[in-house]
Length: 388
Length: 243
Image (cartoon, rainbow over all chains, first blue to last red; front, top):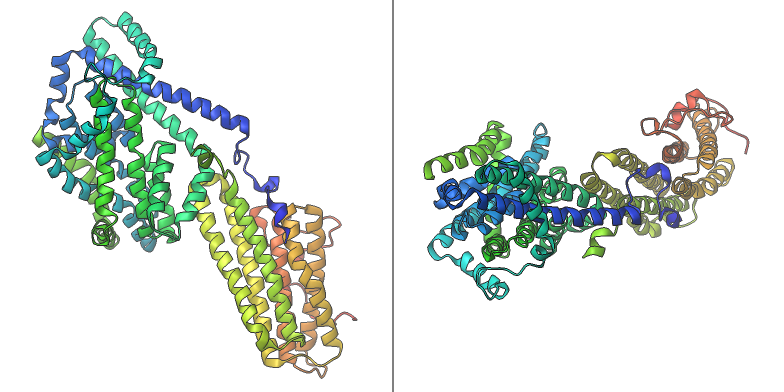
């Protein structure tokens, strides 16, 4: 058998950028580290901007999210607008770090970000809307993510309001990292990169007429840099890990279980985007080679993996509350997974709901528009306006 | 974790290619078993289980290739779509080789071996020529050897023509031949197997949209009317070659 000839594909069957050389790989890793540094500096700049606005202005801006449903709605809307829960949660970490929002108020926002991010793969499923059988599978595969998040919020948000369980767990987990002076986190990243946001702050102060204007400029600069660096990290890592992603997804095709959760989490940590991971599954589910039962754990793993962004962001925030809200994000997704994965009867809830919705969507396409606009735009908009 | 993340670059299509080459190895095995049943080398009943197992292995390999290609296209995006379409087409050709061989086995199981004579000798010669060509197609494809591919296509076309001439000769019913229907079917299946091997090798010399339809090459001996992939479309009735 001539398989030894195929250890490397003939040139005609290799795409030009298909395989990275060692040099290219190193260059990408260096670029990735630089981008991470800029990302962390952007979090700091964002915090500086909020601080520059002054306590009163910042409080005035964010007092509206004190109601949990308003916070939830803001989290959904913000994530739908920027198409990235990583950007939303990193921003929330900066807000909490700057004491503009309390950890308690930020918890529903983080949960909202989880729901908002699932719009991306739902939109990806629309690619097969003209082919009913394919669309039924794709839409169910996409909305199982939505339903998991919705069910997790339905259980954990009231529990959090009543008991503060997630918040207290985050406080307990972060306690060992708290400095002796209380409330301060000794971050090596802050120590190493603290000069960069200081430099930006000094530059902005020089060219702006007042502290308020400087604050607005810093917030805009911080947010823009945050988004650009996350997009760049995602693009670079998508190429670097393509081989691993392909091999891992091949593994989960024929099986369900914890391996899917691990693979989903690792891929998402690598590309810093749960949307990339969950959207990769949609064509496979649409084609029928991946069942939604086998795709479900990968989606849950992506939910867990995406919490790493907020944890990284918290490294740039000296206040311990930044780390606490990042831990709440992780605990929310981990607890949701523990609730809606191991027990078959509970696991079937989001999967069954997603299948039912997909049936409705195939019967009448208007349901698709009603669902997407209703869940990701109208409801959070109404929630923001009513409960603010 | 770093190693896990950065390893396996370009592995996807390499694995697909290895699966495809393994399919051709199984194809050859199925062909050899089928010819053994048809020409009387062994009792068909004793070969059936192994033939079914090998033929099912090619079916499963084709399904696996499809799944792998779908994952590859999802992860890598549109840049590898031409390669994915090519492997999809090749896997179908390889699956057909096993399928046609199995059909030939069925003919052998019903009709039994042909009596000694001109037809039997020709079929033995065809078996000895075509069997190594099945794996040769894979070797040429794996090495992307354009010269060998052109030579292969010329040889395979010539064998196709030979099968077609024999079929035409039998269909005219001018001569008394034992097992006429079984013999026509056997030549027909061998011709179709050759057509699928030509399709596979044409991937080396033709762009994606022209695969299965190799154009005549200078000095390659291919005629315009030989560009079709089925042996019965290659020419009109003619006398069979002298053996």
